[in-house]
Length: 124
Image 1 (cartoon, one colour):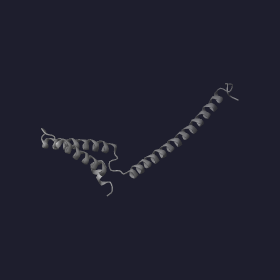
Image 2 (cartoon, one colour):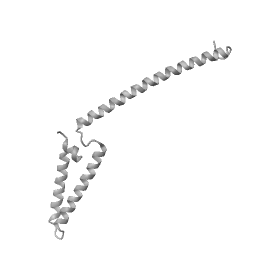
Image 3 (cartoon, one colour):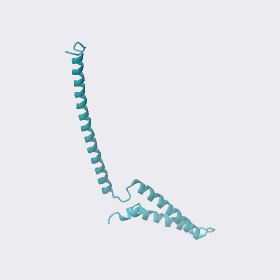
Image 4 (cartoon, one colour):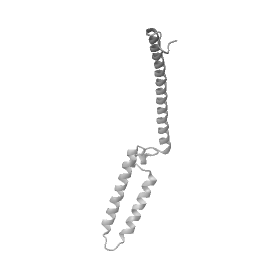
């Protein structure tokens, strides 16, 4: 149940409350302005606020951390790091195996050259 708001909206509940308060305060500042229709101010500021919320949600969802708390994010990052370390260890084992094969192939070539050219430089 924890983090359901963040998964739905893309931002934390506190961020949403802060945006709502700023929106209400902005409406309150401009509503009493003479010569400006109250409906235009209210709908204009609400529309702008929803647009800002949509943009924030888009980038939060794009980052992929909208539904994760700090602990969940850290856990996911640790799992990814462990996977990368295991892949790196496997690659190192593969490189060591290839080095052994290369050494073996070089020894075979050296032996073959010594058989073909017994007086060649480097033959003992």
